Image (tube, rainbow over all chains, first blue to last red; front, side, top):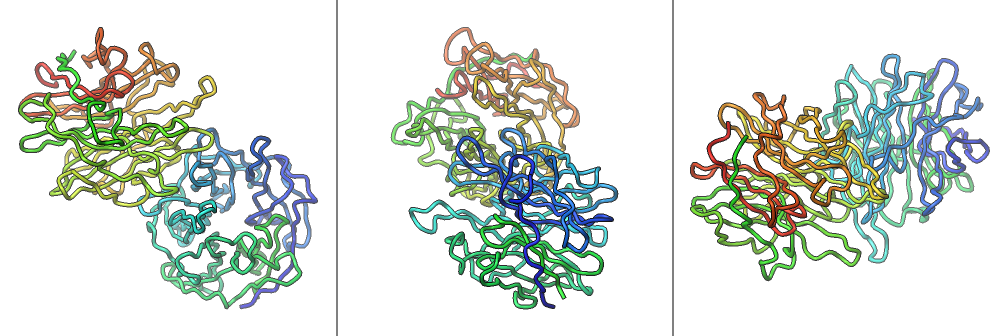
Length: 318
Length: 320
């Protein structure tokens, strides 16, 4: 298998987005409709007071070959959570999956903390209008910190396989000041949970399902799973846990693992491998992959430099 | 109506020397019986930090079993460490509920973290003691009872019991944050979960006690015991705003049930309220009922939710 890059396919700065968002189109996630591909992403507004970012979900409708843009969402897809709720300060990302006539949106909600910057958890919102708007099933999350997953449960990716809901997600192993004067940084790993209804989940509870390549301080994020030729392939992104924002050699790259039984995963970042392209939009960083199939082709959507500040691109898996 | 005879305040944290982490408050009393003493766990606070913010610690006081008005000793150290950076219990472990489990003592406690838009969030953790309840080791770095769609925040006030071979956890779940004069105040209701092992819990996702004084009534510290063929719950409740004084502050309520799920509230039966004067003249809260050598006691908090300690009352007759 090998990737053929299609280049950057969406630039948020040339569209008018809801909530006054101007930059960032992070963590693209596809919903294949009859006549289009609806790609959800998280974009950012800036708080008037304090100047912090808040992530909001929007979407862009694209042609089924990802070459043309049909339009962007005019209204908010889902509002942020209320005072004190897990998703009060942002939703990033949201993963969508068809369940009968509905579309389930698994949100990663962000809420701000004092001693560390943030805590996250995974919520569920349901759409009955083909993904134009989503309504929460409750104010709280469906998956959050637990006995051995102490913080930062997020980045849920859900797939229904053999009648069971499977979720791959990340859990934090802890916060640490790697350099005394720095803000605390977090480390997270990929975990797995199953469910009969997509609402009540049973975690494997802190079983790290993909081995580290960079050692214990490797952070793994945004797993996505696709079945190709009877084998399950997982893509994700990984990086060092500190000094990763502007140091390209420590920043996000795309990782890969495969499994035949959904239990044992073999890491194999080289086959296929997605590499930075010098001088291009993805020269320094590759992150937030999302794999899906349309018209017999397997695609990978992903972000490039600066965590997707300038948009997302695509590659075809051949 | 039950008749509780007040025995007075038993423990005053301000009288304890040499423990900077135990400067004031003795909240959420919870009794564990030993051969010749009663160990009462409570939560306390050191002096606030430069910004006036508190952390809560938990410890115990040993009372004489023959005369529980006599203090025999106080824990030298808190029973639990605070959580690490970014963990759910980084800024407090309060309250604690303990239960014997074979040769061990299991503790369920609420852990406190600090948030930006609201002052705090709370979740319930678990810990185990293998030295008779003197020190506890956390079962994990995260909470044992996760948040869920209907229980979005502020899971607190755990009280653990075993009935009919099943573990039961009563607790409170935040319903909303209400802005009162610009300050976010939590509204919470009494809930329950069950478990076969005390680790994996199934929530029943239901408010157990109907609200009486107002829709946003805050309900806390559900304390359940079994006597006279039915289950008894004493709890505390208050108004959602202006509750730091006498008129709208905590009072003790009562409900009964035959099946632990359907409860009939009857506060008039509780039989204990504020005194005319003294240490519990403004509010009473955090009831904890326990049997000791043929008598039924209630430990409870007085003014300022236990800032000056907890007291005891003894029941005339039996719970029925």
